[in-house]
Amino acid sequence: MSIGYKSFHESSVKDPKGFWTEQAKLVDWHKPFEQVLDYSKPPFAKWFIGGQTNLCHNAVDRHLKDRAKQTALVAVSTETEQERAYTFEELHTEVNRMAAILQAHGVRKGDRVLIYMPMIAEACFAMLACARIGAIHSVVFGGFASHSLASRIDDAKPKMIITAEAGMRGGKAVPYKPLLDEAITLASSKPEKVLIVNRGLSEYSTVANRDIDYASEREKHLNTKVPVEWVDATHPSYILYTSGTTGKPKGVQRDTGGYAVALASSMRLIFGGNPGETMFTTSDIGWVVGHSYIIYGPLINGMATIMYEGTPLRPDAGIWWSLVEKYKVSVMFSAPTAVRVLKKQDPAFLSKYNLSTLRTLFLAGEPLDEPTASWIHDALKKPVVDNYWQTETGWPILAIQRGVEVMPHKFGSPGVPVYGYNMKLLDEATGAELGPDQKGVVAIEGPLPPGCMQTVWGDDQRFVKTYWETVPGKTVYSTFDWAIKDKDGYFFILGRTDDVINVAGHRLGTREIEESISSHANVAEVAVVGVEDQLKGQVAIGFVIAKDPAKVANMEAEVMKTVDSQLGAVARPARVYLVSALPKTRSGKIVRRALQAVAEGRDPGDISTMEDQSVLAQIKQVIGK
Ligand code: AMP
Image (cartoon, rainbow, N blue to C red):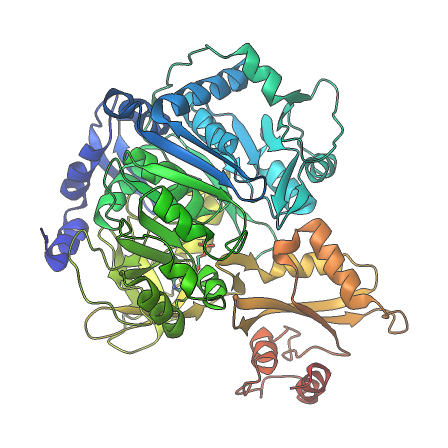
C-alpha cells in the first residue's frame, strides 16, 4: 500500500520525534530510549537518548528464534572458487568465536579494531564481533596501501588489527600482510595484536608476541559464548575514513541506535527487502555501501546477504546473474561503473539466467548516465533505482522510495529527498534558497536524521568547520555537491563543489594523491584533477613539473608506482603528464578547474585571473588536445 510520499516526508521533517519513534520499533531495544532527539548542541544530533541496544544482536541474535536455519551469509569467491553459506545459527557461532578471540586478547568496549581484509566471511564475523562487544571497528578498503593505512592507524589508534595474508583479484594473489607490516612500521601508534586469517594464498612473515593466527585461536574458542554488550544508542559503532579536500582523511563516526533504526527502515521503505529473502550488494566492506547494505542492513532485516570476492567478469560476465538465480536474490545493489563494464559484454549473459526473484536493481555512488540506465533497464526489465548518498550519511539522501510511493523515475535524477532529510538547494555565494532549475549546493538542514555521522572521530571542531560552516549566513550541512531541482522536486546532481573526485564510484581526494606524488624525488610541483571517463565516470590525471627535466625518462611510470605503493592502485592516476608550468592565479593558487577543462577538451572559460595565460596552451599541446 502506498503511504504517499509528500505527507510522509513532511511528517518526517516537521515531527522528527514522532516519526522516528515509530521507525525505532523496527529494532530491538534492551532498554527503551527516554528521549528521541537531543539537539541542544547543534549541529551535533543525538538520537534515542537513554536507549540501549546492540547492532550484532539486531543483525544476528534476534533472528535465532524464527530463522536459525535460514541462510544469513553466503560468501562466494570466484577467485579461490569457494562458496559457503552460513545460517543465522552458524553465523552466530562464528561471531561468538571471533568475539571470544577479541576479548581473550584484551579488546574491550570502546577499543578500536582496524579491519583490513578482503571480501571473505571472516571479515563479516570480525565486524559483527566488534559490534557484539562494543568495540569500534574501522574497516580500511583492501585496495589502500601502506601510507593510507598508516594514517588511519594513527588516527584510530586500534588495539588490534584483523587482516588476511592476501586477497585475490583476477586470479592473482594480492598480498595484504606485508603492506600492513609496512604501515605499522610507518605509524606512530602501534596495535598490540594483529590477527591473521591465513588463506594459504601467499607466504608471509610474523612478528613474535604481536601476530596471532586466526585458525588456531578459533580452535580454542569453538564453544565460547560471548554475551552481547548492551551499549547506549549513541555509542560509536564504527569509524569509516573518507577523503576530503585536505590530505588527511576524515574519520566518519557512526552511532549504534540511530544507525540500526535508519538501516532497518531503509531496508523496507527504500530497498523493499523482506525478511527471508536475499540481498546481493556488489560493493566492498571497505566502503560505506558495504557497511550498510552488505553487512548490517540486510542482516538487521532478517535477510541473507551475499559477500562476493571477484570481478564481474570471471569466469564470465554472467557470474552475478547466476548468483541471483542460485540464491533467489530479490534486491540487488551495484554501481553504474559495474553496469558500464557489463554493457561491453554479450547481453545474452543477462537472459541466460532465471531472474524472476529479482524485483529491483539499485545503483549508487556516482552519477547514473542515461545510456547505462536504459541499457540495464531494458536488459533486466526490472526497475532500476538510482540513489544518492555519502559515506557521511550512511544511507540514501535522495531516491525514489518505492516502499513509500512508487513515483515516476526521471533519467539523470536520483529522485526526491528521502524521509528524514530536510534538503535545501542553496546559492553558494549568498546562501539564499534557490528555485526550480537554478544551480546550487545541496545542503541538509539540521538535525541530520538517525544513522548519519555523529562527528569526525576525535575532532568535533573539524566536523563543524568542514560540513556546517561553508554556506554564508547559515549553519547547514553541505554535501559539497552541485545540483538543480526541477519543479516537481527532483534533484539532478551535477558534480562536486570541492576537489574530491569520484573514480568508479569511489571517492578520492586529489590532495592526497598530490601529496603522494610530491614525495617522488624529482617532483617539484603537482596538480591532480578528475577527468571524465567513459567507463569509470572519472579518472585522476596528474600534471607534474620535474625538478630536473633531464631525468624524466620513466617519470610517468615511477610516479604511478609511488602512488601504488603509498596509497594503493585505487588512487593511481590514469595518466601523468610532465609540464613546464601549471595554471595559477596571481596569488599563486593552481586553477584546477582550468586544467580539468583542458584535459576534457572543453573551453576553460574565464581565465582572466590567471597569471600566465599561455600556460594552458602549452598544456594542451602536451596532452594533445
Ligand atoms: P562516497 O562518500 O564515497 O559514497 O561518495 C559520495 C559522493 O558520491 C557524493 O557526494 C556524490 O558526489 C557522489 N554520488 C553518490 N551517489 C550518487 C548518485 N546516485 N548520483 C550522483 N552522484 C553520486
